[in-house]
Image (tube, rainbow, N blue to C red; front, side):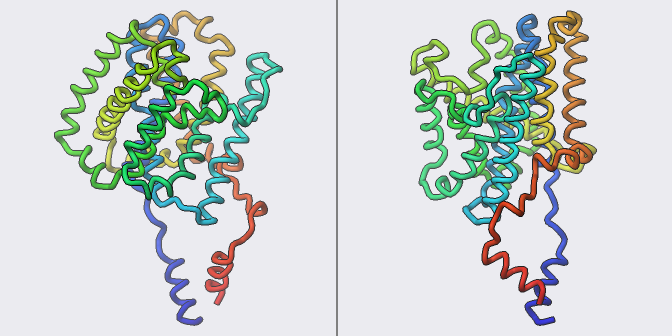
Length: 360
């Protein structure tokens, strides 16, 4: 072999870059909270405590997940291989699950008229649309001078713009944008900072205060604000309230997200391996979450609204989403979540050159 061939062989012999257990743990714990919050939603009408927990978790679970997505999108550019992964890992799963959710609703909810519309994401698929748009904008955030203030300004403009409509769930895309941009700006030392012992200790009273505040606010405000899918006018309040709520919720979300990260284990845990399958758990648990509403489980079984029933629902939600993140489930649904689709793309010159180099 030529010297080039030796170097190529050495590169191929290097071990793959190890995953950071902290981030896999954070993703798994965040997705468990997402599933639990979806299970609590039908309980909030009859339980102020459930509503308080629901509002508290909704303040930070998706912001934390989005921030991590932004952090791992820092290297994204328009390189062909990265664009291919964006299509196969985000756009294609969006199409598949948007169709699957629609067909499921037609059957489970006895709603044959439910249309298939790729422009109007249904239920959980909005996140894939948002991730696709956010990742395409990464090069822009790298060149602007004040990315986070600009993202916040865009979010505030969105919340006072009722004419945006529902196409591609742009309200959510724009209102959650600051958390993605914040993730782009994060550095490893920032995560080290929130994992300090004093931050971990401080996070306990902060979480307690957040739950108490949510308990007070539960009968006084609508939790729809946390979904970030509507404008201020659509929620029946003056436009300036939308701006205030955007800034207030952003501040609360950042604080509680930092508290959440402070308690995420740094070392490898039994659930660390599940962090690689969180998108599987996120999208697949939606069928059960919606099915429980369609089939009237919470209406037909009153005991679910009692304290023990609420605990049971919480445990079931955490267990189900955990199972859906496991490697066997990943292998079963990889055709939909991570299709290779080599047949759909041209092979660029750089890739062909690398293959020729490896063969010499």
